[in-house]
Image (tube, rainbow, N blue to C red; front, side, top):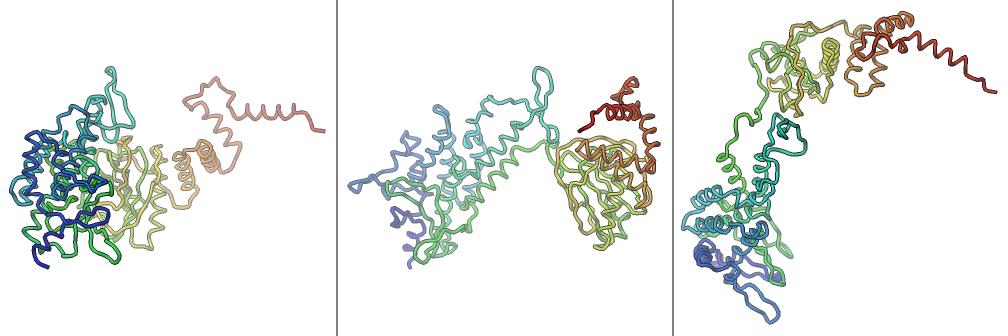
Length: 485
C-alpha cells in the first residue's frame, strides 16, 4: 500500500454501509470554513448537498463543513434565541484553524475555551446562572444555610452555586452530547488529521476513524468511532492515538484540570487529604503490636481539642481519633496478630461500654476492619458532622474485670443508651437495675420510688407513677374484674 493510498484510508464515511474515504485535512480546511462564517455564511450553507434522484445527500467535499454544522446545531439546541454564543465559538474555531502542531494548538484552544467557559459550556443558560436560584446559600461542613428575612435557616437538597457550577462544567466536558464536548471532539479531529500527516507510522494500517450516516442523509460525524476490519464486519475499539491532543478523553480531562487551576478553591473549602497523625506517639505506643483493629464509630462525642486521644485500658493502648466534618470517629486497638482479633474486639466493646457509662453519650460501631500496623487508619468513613465536645479528657473511664456482673451491667447500660428503640432501652435499663439489686425486687421497687422524682419531666406531686401505687391499683382492678362463667 502506497503512502497516498494509506492516507486516503484513515478516515472513512459510511453511507448506507458503503465506505467512502475522507481526506484527513480538517486542519487545512478549517481556516476557509471559519473565514466564510465570519463573512456571514451559515455553516449549513457551506455543507453542500447532492441528489441521487430520490434523496439529498451530503457532498463528499463537505464532510468537514458538516462537522462544524453539527457543532453549531448543538449550541442552537442548548441556547435560547438571542444569546451571543456565536462570537465565542468562532473565536475558538479561529484559534483551532491556526497553522500549529497538535500540542501548541490545544494549549491555545484551551485558553480560549477557559476565557468564555460559562458561554461555551452553556452554564449561562441554566436557571442557577440567571438568578432564578438562591445565590446566598452557604456551606459549613456538610450542611447548607441560607439567610431568609434576616434569619439563618438550614436548607436540605441544594448546594452552593459554586459547587453546582463546577459540577455542571465538569459534566459538560464529558457529556458526549454537550456543546463543550462537541468543541473537544472537533479539536481531537483537527489534531488527528495533523498528526497523521506528520506521523503516519503511529497509526496501524488496520485502524480506521469511522463517520456514520443514515440512508436519509442524517449525519453524526461528531460521534466518530475507531474501527478495525473483523470477520464479516467491523469491530469498534477504544483505541487512542499516540498524540494526546488527538484523544477526546484526554482533552476533557485536561480541560477540567485547567479549569480547576484557573478557578482556584479557597482553603476553607478544601477537604483534608488525610487524618492528622502524631507518628512519634503512634510508633512509641504501638511498637509491640504488628497489627491493629480499626472501628468506625457513630457518636456525637469529641475528646478535647486535638485530633486524637490515647487511652490505657486493661493495659493496652487505645487510640481515639476524633470525628472531623468529613469523617466518622475512628477507634484503633493495637493487636498482636490474627489470633488476637477476637479478644481485641471484645476489649474494644468493653471500652466503648465503659465510655458510654462514664459520659452518658451513645457510641455505636458502624463497621470494623483488621489491618497491619499503620499511622493512617485503614477505615476513614465519611459522615455528616454533629459533635458533642467532651473537654475533660482526664475523667477516668469506668473499668472492671471482664465477665463480671458489673461489666455486664455496664454493657447493658451502653445497649440502652445506644438503642434507637424505647422498648429495648427500657428492658436494658431494667436489667441493669436487677443486676444492681442482685434480684431483690423489694429493694428494686424501693430504689425506683426513691429516685422517681429525679426524672426531669416528673413533678413530685405526680405520685401516680410510684411503684407501690401502681401495684395497688393493679390489685384493685383485678379484684373488681368480673369472673367468667
